[in-house]
Image (cartoon, rainbow, N blue to C red; front, side, top):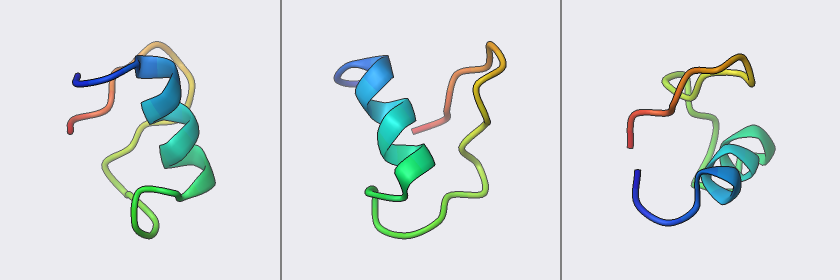
Length: 34
């Protein structure tokens, strides 16, 4: 994961990474595949 995991997770949840990301897991212990 490049950058900070927290920022990536927040961005994915808020949809700031360019639209909805189906591959972005919800907060449950899994890491997003970026």
